[in-house]
Length: 139
Image 1 (cartoon, helix red, strand yellow):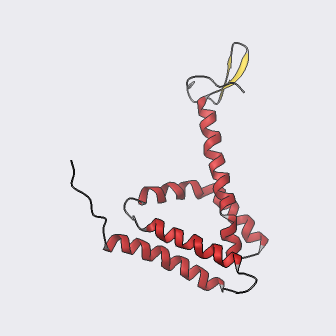
Image 2 (image 1 turned 120 degrees about the vertical axis):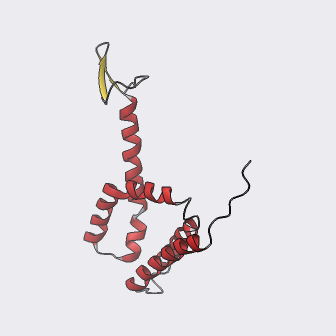
Image 3 (image 1 turned 30 degrees about the vertical axis):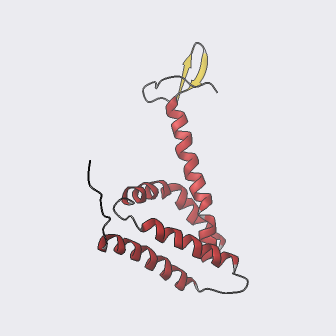
């Protein structure tokens, strides 16, 4: 579908020269909503690491599609303040990956998994607050 070169008020589509055209606002909507779907699909392994109940897996992904974008931007906004959080989140992803790979050999209780996730996130936030990032001299 052809796209106009500029925005047309708050419209997604306009008729230009007898032809329907999308506006850049519609393209932005497609990008934002596709990232919601990508984040929801990305969260499936994390949910399956906690439970195999189809209802919980389905509903958690519905909620992920509805609200994960807002959570992502909230986390992205806090990353400067809580500069060690990305290490904590990376550690959690490694743990979940190992847990999923070894689930046939080792059974890790759900309560332990959730407690570990909460502890790592809380620990990375507290470490960022207790040991603030040193800023270099301003030029």
